[in-house]
Length: 437
Ligand code: GUN
Ligand code: ZN
Picture 1 (cartoon, helix red, strand yellow):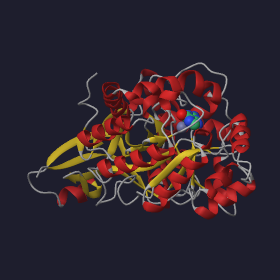
Picture 2: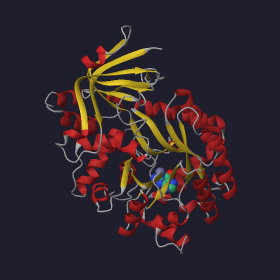
Picture 3: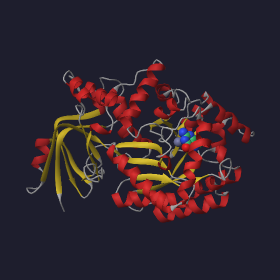
Picture 4: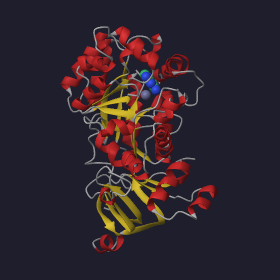
């Protein structure tokens, strides 16, 4: 067994920061190290202490002066939309019908799904994302390609075959029964294999008949530990159309409640326009509102009230995500840059420690996976990344006047993207440097 000692400055959170000055929320080592073997972090802390307890033949890698943080987690992304990103549309429904649905039809072909799955994980690694939560297409073959590629790379991943049986092109429709059977087959084939997690994935209420929503409910009952992912309250026209399809429901959220889909493993993409009643329902169920800032701005969907949701008397759990291809970047740093600007427009402050908490431990907590990912704690997966705040000439110039960790984090977030990611370690293996260029 090879044991590796990775030396750099290190930063890892133990809880959500209460303020910019809340140093108790994280651990920062100006000369830190991780001891890694068999894909697991065996020890972390000050270099001298970790080195002392390492085996004599340990292999040492020195990333100083760079900063190690846990690998980023992207809690909502569409892997079949890699060739949809950057498509010019007025709004969500036009974008879906004009570009997204036709593109997803191509994933009926195994070779295409496999090719894009390879590119997908390449981009995740390039951008420092070590766990993604993805929608595949309606075709089982797309989920097979998605999970096979993760298994090959030993990445922890969450994903689901999309269930959709109406309001889309014929080539993108299953039926209530097929959605149920094929999701069950994906679970049987992939869940728990390697580091794979299967999510029950009805796309959204517009593209599922009541019969299919009942099928999703049956799956949720049979597999209560699985994640559930769908979309909720993204766009005003979407909300009106959805509510017209389910007139018996009190509101959009109530549709998912009626089909037993609201719970602590449920991830709802967007949640921009929720009423107070809907926020209460989300809070009481412990469901997650997934903020996708670059997508919300690109599609003109609206401004997500991140801070307001978190500080309610009945707080709503939140996570952050790219939502590629509605989102415009694979980078979680770019994502938080836009999240910051949205909070600015809402008169709120999102400080740099908030941002790094959300991209790492916060997203891990949202997935109920904080015992595995999202920190540098001993016993967790060795998924971590190395960041360089002086990766470009313009960043290096600004870095000359950076005087604190907070300023460094904020520079990385504001100007950074894949170029600042020096290395991405997946289960202890340096994976970015091994990518085909
Ligand atoms: N709502 C239903 N499907 C989608 C999708 O693919 N992207 C976004 N942004 N919203 C959706
Ligand atoms: Zn989405």
